Structure formats: structure tokens, C-alpha cells
Amino acid sequence: MASIEYPGGAFVYVDGRRWFVRESGEGEPVVLLHGIPTSSFLWRKVLPILGRERRVIAPDLLGFGRSDKPARGASTVTELAEQLARLLERLQVERCALVGHDAGALVAVALLERWPERVTHLVVTNTSFRPERWRGAGFSPLSLLRVPLLGDVAIALARPWMLRLAMRPFLADPSVLDREALRGYWEPFELGFRRTLVRLARQPLFSAADLERWRVALTERCGEGRIPLLVAWGARDPQFRLDEAEEYARTIAGARFLAFIHASHFLPEERPRALGRAIAVFLERPAAVPVLS
Image (tube, rainbow, N blue to C red; front, side):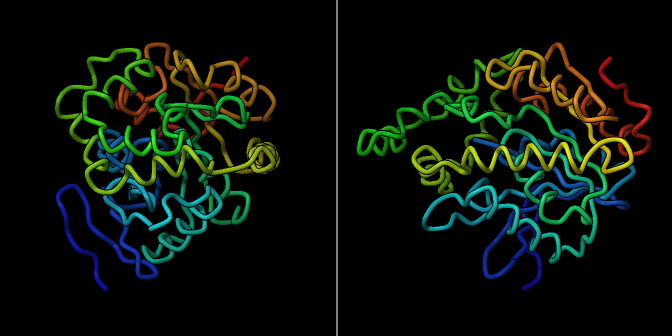
């Protein structure tokens, strides 16, 4: 079935499931991956910056945003990576740069682990390979949603102001979450994302063993003479702390590193122009981006 145009993007069908995909520009492909509890809306301001020179693709992963919501809720990260690989085939993308935020970075590394030949560059932002840092990360009410019945009632009663309250501690400047932005982040909750979020709270996307395997894949497949890696971080993230980002930047030879001191967890929302320009420079000439001394 052909793509169906929709404001801000288009619907694409893969294996009978409907994906919502935002695209911009032409050229070498770059894929932007969101995390929890966001969607491709997170990348809306970065998309046109990178789209000046490249084909930029930002999908809503299955279970998120405007994409289909599987009846059982969210998939695991491994499944999301497999689904993403099939979407890229449908979009005729053989090789691409991957940019992942939060859980989207894990999806990117999971795809890298399985299909390294399909990845030209990797950018990871505000994520973690440490299990303890994912307990409630990015969305504090997750702990409440784990409780049967109580969690179901809580998610049913959720309102936009509650999402604002949940995201606020993860923004260096909460004013960026204005009425328009909040509307965009809230929209998926009216499209079935509530079920996904409950599933995420009760059945994690990954295991500790998965995280360790992906950490090893990152260190073995990226860096000097291999797949170029950029570690870009909102320095004021209270959950995924800067020290972990610095650790990877120091231990992976040739890894490039940028810390955005006036940003927190939601870096693409808070510093879209600076992040977009940094990624553009990295994709064009990785050596132009500094390493951590």
C-alpha cells in the first residue's frame, strides 16, 4: 500500500502495520529515533536543519506517537530494532546514520549490533547502559503505573498538565514546553499510547544482559577506524548523568563528545539548532567535532 500523507509526515505500511514517518530533504539518509515517552515530534526542529543536506527520516516507533499500537503494548528494544530494519527496507534505505535519544539510542545500538554494515555513523544522546538508571527514567509516574488496577486508573485519568509536571524535572528550561509543544507530546496519549506506557512500566523493554551486550557492541563497533560515534549530552540530565557519557567518550577511541551545558534530558527539544548543527558537522567530517581530553 502506498504512503498516506498526514500533516507533518506520512503513514507507511510495513507488514500490515502503519508507521507514521516524518521526512525532510534529500541525500545520504539520517534516521532520528525518539525515546520514552516521546515520538518523532521530539525531532521536529532538528529535522529541517539536517534536511538541508541530507534525507532525514524520523519515525514514530510502533506503539508510540501516531504509529499503530500493538494490542500487547510496546515491543522490546530488540523487536523495535527488527521492526525499524524492515521499515528502512520499505523506505529503500540500505545504509544510514542513526541518531538516538533515550531508549531510541538503545534501538540504534541494537540495530548496529545485528546489522553493522547498515550503519554509517552513530549519535547517542542522553541514554544509559546501566540498569539502575532506567528505573523511572524520563517519566517519574512509571512507578505508579506498575501497580495493578491503581496504575490502570491513573493512566486513564491522566491529563496534559500531568505530562507537563512529569517532564518538568528533565528540562533545564521548562518554558520550552509551551502550549504548542505540550499539545504535540500529549497527542499520542489520545491515540492509544496510554496502553503502551502501562506495558513499559510493567514489562521492561530490555534486560540487564541486553544492556551489557549493547554496551559491548558500542565499544567494539564504534570509534577510530570503525563506525564514527558522537556522544551528545544534555549536561543537566538528573537521570542519565554526564559522567556516563564522559566514560564512553574516553574509553571508545576516536569517539566525539559534546556536552550542552544549558540542556537537560530532552536535548532535541531544548537545543534543537545547536544539536542539529553539531550533528550536521559530525556527519560531514567527524574529526571536526572534539574528543574529550
